[in-house]
Length: 143
Length: 84
Image (cartoon, rainbow over all chains, first blue to last red; front, side, top):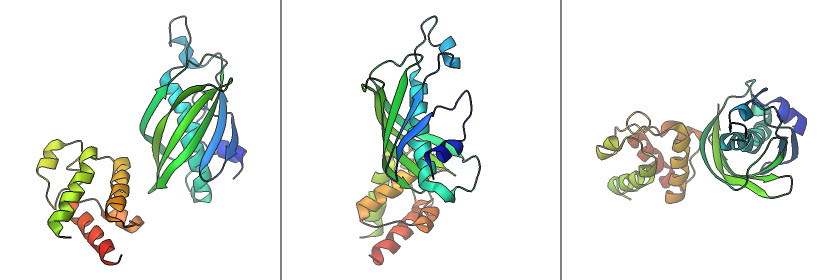
């Protein structure tokens, strides 16, 4: 499956699609990017007159690239439902730097295991300067 | 390994994932992981992986599907240990 096909197979759409590009992918890891738009809906409220990307959204970006995109690549032709059904089952993320409107983030994810429809990954997020923004463990289920 | 030893090891494995502590106190062969202990399906996978490590066995999809109660889990583990 190509990088473009992975994105096409994602079960999200605007305003909750947080994947622009997949840079690298194989069975064990994935790397992708997303650029936060200046008019993302959540900046209106987080925070009053001081837009900063919420941690839950950073977690979501990490999950969409690091877990769902990787999961779609691994499952490939085994995906028999469109859109694929996914659910996040656990997260443990530490945050290091704020992400502002217009910032580009790069997500790198390494598979810990994929067993019985559960994918667990070590996921890191970097900003455009290459600084660590967030890292942690995310797991999700499919099917 | 006796059934009691096996049950004791299994109890240690499932303990961190249990939401209903009352259910854990009353654990028996009939205990259902999801209904009685309120373990979610993602943590059921973790239990299977921990069981594999603890007993040095590999659980396949059939085994996983069966392992919903203490009794069924003990049977699957004993079965895998016997053919190891």
